Length: 112
Image 1 (cartoon, rainbow, N blue to C red):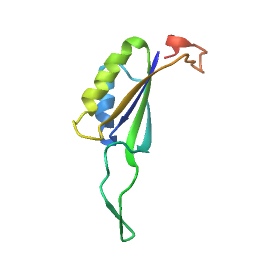
Image 2: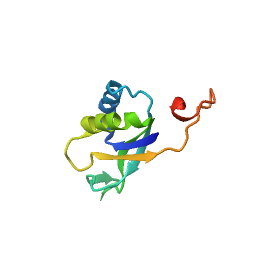
Image 3: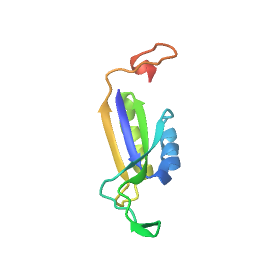
Image 4: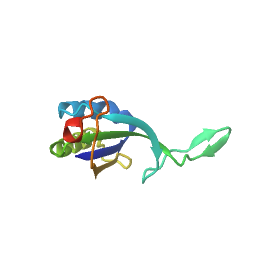
């Protein structure tokens, strides 16, 4: 089992979600987050002063999948979220030791 964490532009969430559904991946967790990578945000006017925010609004998607779904999930996210410009985001794939479903007590791949 793997945990796929994708940090994407907020405006791409609906397109990425549709691409994941097309890949038969329908269980996701979505969070708002902020961060800063290579992309720089535009200068804003706040109380009469020009400021450049240090953190940029992003959307974080967490998906736990069985190993056979890793490539389809990553491919779906990349194809839906890529613009070719700085700030498209990142995808991190991490191993998962165990998963438990609270309601039924199932564990492992059956709980995913």
